[in-house]
Amino acid sequence: MNAEGPEDLDDAALLARHVAGDGGVAFGELFRRHRDRMYAVALRTTGNRELAADAVQEAFISAFRRAEAYRGEAAVTTWLHRIVVNACLDRLRREKVSVRRAGDLGELDLPDRHDRHGSTETALVVHEALARLPETQRAALVLVDMHAVPVAEAALVLGVAEGTVKSRCFRGREALAAMLRPGGLAASDAGEDEGAGPAVVASAERTEPRGAS
Amino acid sequence: MSNRHDDTDPIEHDPTGMRALLGSLPDPGPMPADLVARIEAALAAEAAAEASAAASSTPLAAVARLDPARGEVSSAGGGARAAAGPAGDADDEGSRVVPLRRRSRWHLVAVAAGVVGVLGLGGLVVETLRPGGLQASIGMSAEDSAAGGSSGSGAEPDAAGGGPATLFAEDGALGVVVLGSGRQYSTSGLADEVRASLPWDGTGREATATSSPQNAPQSDREQGFGPLAGAAGARACADGLGVPATETVVVDLATVDGQDAAVLVATSSDGERRVWAVSRSCSATAPGVLAGPVPVS
Image 1 (spheres, chains in turn cyan, purple):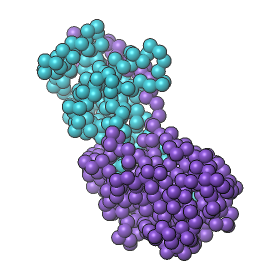
Image 2 (image 1 turned 180 degrees about the horizontal axis):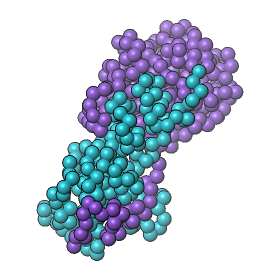
Image 3 (image 1 turned 30 degrees about the horizontal axis):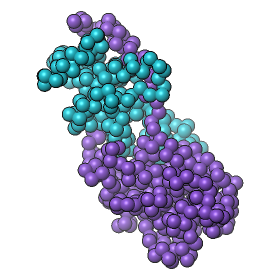
């Protein structure tokens, strides 16, 4: 009998056991371990609970089916992050128009019961601004600044060079700061009303510098 | 307005202060229980599809495939783990999901499927979802049954003309699924036995299954197994146990301590599960509790 239960195995061993075929037991343990973090990344990347839920389900099913594609060159969590982020970006692209509208405050319910009093309003404003960033910059900021993922790992997750990750973070921060200045979001709204899109976002979408993949 | 930077700057270099601000935002919290149940059900379907493919036997084997265009579940055969495609590409047809805003009926299936998973039926098969109800057929091999601590005889469903595991009834409106696994439970170990049957709960149990949906006429089923073999009877039993109507109920017609009995699992909308062992005569007025309620974590 195998004395080691799934809970005793590390992520790579679990994935190997899943690839060998164990009826979903090992993958279920992976799901249990990482579901909350992956959900948080998806929620912050999409800014929308429904999209996040759909994306994270899609991602876990994809990971279940394609575990053979994991070659052990990066941590399992990096591999999972990549699948989740790709699923989120894919969904955002598919529903870009509706998601732009979902940037409205009413749809952005990210702050929850974990919030305390005044921090809720701040979080809502920041999330609204975050939702207006280009998706690639938002994904970089979510990983690096919100989830403390190292740049090198974020580069693997996003499939770009490290310099590109840093550039996206720097530009994303600048764009966020501009939107969070007094009147920044309103100016962004005015730009949208004129049909030209938020000026600050347009600025943020400038061509990425060297290192972009 | 732009702050100068280049790629040689450390990522921590942030004159804007946005990095600190983003890092200070509250965590969104854990994955909601209903989403956990929904994904667990989808993964159970995947595992069942693989087991079915491995068995490569029954043409009835089918696995839930989610059709976002129709907002419902449809059948598709096979489903073994695909080796093709990049790991990061999650755009294949089979991995699509039902958008939450259109998932009310799917949600019920997912909750029920999660409970079915708890009942040890690793071979969950969810077939076409029809308006007004859910269709779920459950398969479990004799090996699977034995792994859960029973002899794996599957005698009772066989006696009813069914396979190793049989779907007796389902009613989406009532939120009830009734099946017969042939499993042998014990009152002393009920929670552990139910918990151990969940394919991914860390027990190390390998879930293998094939699908063999059987649907004998209800009158025949009830003649052999009593009112619990019907959805209305199962819901009445749940009422007798004090289970709110909002909770999904799965009844497994099995044996408990060697006697004909049933195991009833109720799942709340929060994903909390309780299990009872009851007599086959369980009703709204005389539930005949043998054990429970016991929480299943």
